[in-house]
Length: 210
Ligand code: GAR
Image 1: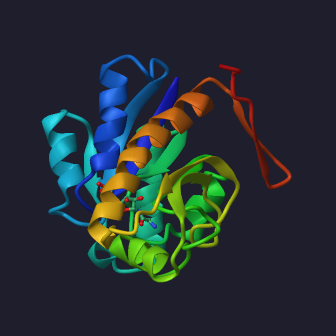
Image 2: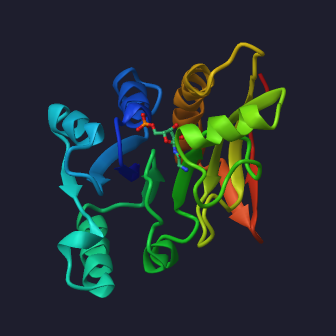
């Protein structure tokens, strides 16, 4: 069983995509054991409450030191039996000791074709504004394994989305988000079925022929 902790900062539509995939049987090997948000009023926590799932509001501001913040986060993840962390719209940099403790067991979804349009400051609508400003014909969504560098690490799945002449950042974000909602559950299914291996910094995904 893949026991996942989902981290998010906002509305939680990618988390909802995971919930829906579990509910309709597309992720038979996956359970959500914890939902974490740095924002007490985040939609993702409302969704967790409605689904009666364990959740925590965890923000660095609640702790006297970085060490106590990290120790409590690690304790919560371990107590829940987490074996994979999913960053689904988490806008904070995950502390390095968490990345070390869950090496190759953290996924992130990003609303662009990494390594393009990633890195510090590249989140939310800023990503789509940058894509439009550089007149790209294609953008997309990426699920990757998280390492210490922001929006960096081996790619598990990536799908393209066309950029239209008529697009605004909002219309482009909506088209990309729809693709995110497909590839995040799909990436989790590949991981749950043991079809993603990370070796020497490269991800080898064995996708069944269609
Ligand atoms: C998603 O588009 C996600 O890819 C993006 O934030 C949005 C969260 O939406 N993440 C980043 O930009 C991280 N670098 P959601 O809360 O509805 O899932």
